[in-house]
Length: 117
Image (tube, rainbow, N blue to C red):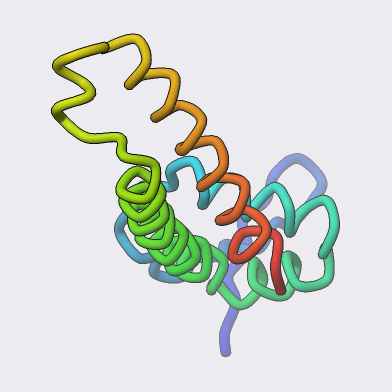
């Protein structure tokens, strides 16, 4: 491996080329996972960052979390009778129930996937 350097004042700085990163945007669960690793699992975070696998890992966790969240919301809504009929009849009740369902589903996903090693 041959390194090249660039002179910056009195210092020689190596010209490092970042490795390829997968395409994709980090959304809510991916950013939550990154913050969790950074604050509570700094060794894992540093290892993933240095090997160039951090974004790949975050995107994988994000995809799993979003899929689990969607399934949980659908199952909870069906179990509690939150349907389009309820939405048409009493929109505010539907919104309250869906907000509660989404909050509980997010809590489950955080504990099962995002904050789990």
